[in-house]
Each structure stands twice: as structure tokens, then as C-alpha cells.
Image (cartoon, rainbow, N blue to C red; front, side, top):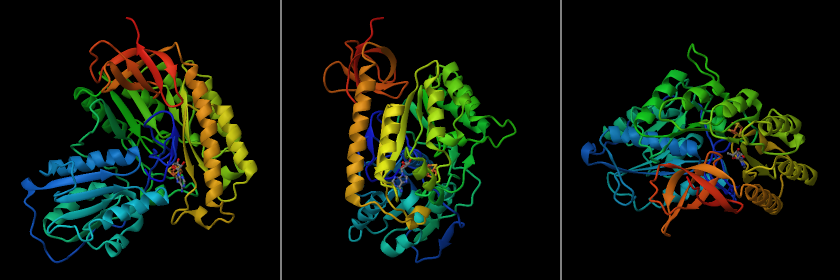
Length: 489
Ligand code: 5AD
Ligand code: SF4
């Protein structure tokens, strides 16, 4: 997702409304969409057709988990065509940037990266821009960076094999910019980066139209995959050794099964968790409007459904929420939190917050702070409002000066840091199951995530294996992580 900074405190990697990336210190989300014209292939002077077997590609991703996962699928498409992925940009035959435009800084970064090739591009090399900036800027990218050959928005990824074939056939410029699709991007092969946790998009696009957000323009309308195809993929993932799946969507809980089974999102969580071999199911990002008791009940009933909900609030002021077109009031949001807090299992709640939305008064900001106090989030991605092209809020009066946005962000982060410190300290002495994901260079030091998505750094004298699940007792806490040791058997 987008860049700018998200100030995340807390739960390591998760996703924001649009599954966040990051701006200040707590975390960030993203998501983007589009409106499709059809794939356009303009006849251009021909280049030598690339030798498929020898072709290499370099793929860099900006932004949210949705983008990360899209990149895994794009890599799968290229690998299936005989390309080889390389880690270094130098000398790659195809250079692809999967971009984010949720905040202005993210979009700027892409153009500065492209600028590096103005003179450095080699004969025959293909440079492509994918994702949200591609969708938003379209053919303008060719004008600003004529050395680019491929511009493809995320809603057109299903056309990617065709676009690549066009490039191989010698077309110099190809675009995929339509968004009026009812299809999702499914691939035979997805090259997944993490050996234990598999991301899986269940709903693409967004119909919510928040007034500040580019996602409905860059990622197009909501399209859900059928529950059958999701379950088939989960079974396949389990057979391949994945134990954790993370269901993704800009508004994952707005999932609407297009098949005759009409499975509810909460039922999908349960059946995915019951697939043999799957130990954990995560999901992100939930929209408060579509968040119901049935989801809490699924978490209560099924241990494999992770005890964590990312529920972006954006503001604690009903007036600002109205201006943002978020479709809920402060009171309605807090009612959802009450549902979560009443659960039989303790559920971690994280959020996204925007400060400095046009017209946000000191009083509105105070209401955001008091909401943070009331909810006691386990993590928050906090952003300064960034005006974006085509969005309704661009035309709103009463812009907040940059320094004031920064001040509010600082106050918010400090408040959230203290909340997290206190929340994590409460956990000292408790034991949690942790998926072992990393080994430190320091002897006997390991790290992983608990079901709550909290980061756990722990000591174990045993030779743990990466990918194992172990019980870890918390011995100390910081605002951003827990420290522990493997619990005695
Ligand atoms: N300015 C600042 N933050 C934004 N977000 C989305 N659009 C903007 C914007 N224009 C934030 C929201 C969302 C997260 C992914 O990014 O908090 O939940
Ligand atoms: Fe999330 Fe609203 Fe953007 Fe949709 S329009 S991705 S709900 S912030």
C-alpha cells in the first residue's frame, strides 16, 4: 500500500483498510482500484523478440499486503512463461514496479525510481509499471517516462499474460487499464514469498467510496471469488505445507460468495480453518459497517481463526467520519468494539487513523484521542491526511496545515505508544502459541507471531525449527513486542 509513513505501533505486519504499508511508526494499510478500458496494444516499432528461456525479471513492490500478494501472482505468471526471477535490478531483462498511490509520497517515489532509467536503460530491456500508480496515471506514465513499455493496473492483471506476450512479440508499449471487470486475478502458479503463511485474495476492489481514498479508482469495484475456488486453493496450500493462511481484501468482510452456496464470510473463516493441515486463518482488512457478531462467534468457536481483528476507525469524531463517508458513527463503531470485547477469547484489535482531514478541529482530534483511550488498541497505523487525485475530499475546504498535521500525528503516536505499553505489560506471565518465523544471530534467540499477531521474541535452548508452533511464556513487554521464553512442557 501506499507510502508516506504510517506510524504503526505494534503488531508487526498486518494490513490496513487497504492493508497498510507505512507512514509514521505504527503500521499502514493500502488498497487501490480501477475502471477498465480494455487492454490496449498500440502497434509500435518492433524490437527483437526476447529469448524466453534466457529472460530474467526483477520485481519490486511498494505498499500493502494486497500489493505484495499481487506481486506473488505476477511472479507466478512470469515463471510459468519461462522467465527467471532475479534479486538485483542490474541486468534484468524485465524490470517491474508494483506501485502504490494511496498517499502522495508513495506515488512520487515511483517516478523518482523510474527516473533512474532515463539514461541507464539498456537496449532491449523492458520497464513496466504495475498497480495503483499505473492505474491512476495511465498513459501519462509514457509521457513522463517514455522509456517505460508496460503500464498495467491491478484490475487488469488477468490480462498480464496477454500483455507480456505482446511485449515478447515486439510491441513497444502495452497497457492494461480497464476496471469494469467482474473477474478476479487467479493464476495457476503463485510464487509465494513466505514458506508458512500464504496470502490469498478473496475479494478484490472496493465499493465503499470513502471520500479520501483512491482505492475505488485504482482497484475497481468489489469482486469476490467463489467459496469453492478459495477452498480448493486452501487445500492445495495445506498439501504444499502452509499452515497459516491470510485472507485478503480491502474490505475482506464484505465478501459475498458469488456461487450458489452463498457462504457468509464468517462461515468461510470456519471452513478454511477446518481444512486439514491449516492451523491458523487470519483476515484483513475488516470494514466496520459489515462487521457483525457472526465474525466474533467464529473466532470464539474455532481456535484456528486468529484472535485478531484489524478494524480501521479513521477518526473518533462522527462529524469527520461523515465527511469521510465512512458510513458509521463513533457510537456505532464503539458498539462493534463492545462485541469484540465481550468475546470469550481475548481478541486483539488494531486500527488505521487519519489525522488532519479537511475541517478536523482540535475538538474532533480530541475525540480521536478519547476513542483511542476507550478502545485500547493493540496496534494502530496512523497517517497524515494526503489529498489524492479524483477523490471527493480533494475539493473540501479547511485544509489543515502540514505542521499541524505533524503535531497531531505526534500526539496520537505518543498516546498509542503508552496504550500499547500498558496492554503488552498485562500479558507478562501468560503463555501463547507462537509460529516460529525467524532466528536471530544471537544464540538461542527466535521470533514469531502469536495468534493475536503480536510479535514475540523468545529464548529457546532447544533446536527449534522454523515453521514450528511452540508455546512461549511472556517474561517482559515493550510497546511493539513481547519478550519470552519457551514454556516448560
Ligand atoms: N491520506 C491519508 N491516509 C489515507 N489512507 C487511505 N487514503 C488516505 C489518504 N488520502 C489510509 C487509511 C486507510 C489506510 C490503508 O490508508 O487509514 O485505512
Ligand atoms: Fe478502505 Fe474506504 Fe479506501 Fe475502500 S474506499 S479501501 S473502505 S479506505
